[in-house]
Image (spheres, rainbow, N blue to C red):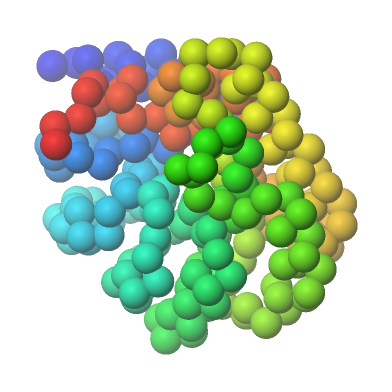
Length: 223
């Protein structure tokens, strides 16, 4: 019964000061979230809009909901009124839609830009060169209802720890580059979301500020 609480306590001990835990609760029932909430966890990540909306409507209102999956532009309007952070902005079209829906909701929506570093075609996100083109165009000045707070990255899905560390090191380099150029006047640009249940200990070596952990806390998902 106390498994979730015990896992959370162990993870919190491992995280350096300033690193936040996003408990990935997708495919897990609201009772599992309530158990983590009772233990003190307040930040939860979901990957599917419909599932997120059903949970948000019945769970405590002080939960900070993060969207961590691939977000379709036609679904942004449903989460715009309440979402605390969108981790997975992977196109200019999506950025513009978030801005549009933020304006309608009357709030600025915090976002992370998804950086593609993995050696896999299945991953979404921008390359480093594409980000230089995007922000070099000054698009951020056209998005008053979006606050870009940093980057999100997923490492290659492999058991090769050196490969994973190379991905995380690249993500940190790109983060520093953007922070020193296009976002040098933006104190909000400070987040680097990387590291999941199987590789967060490696992400911690490369200056992640948020780890996204689900299986370690809640066990295997029930599909």
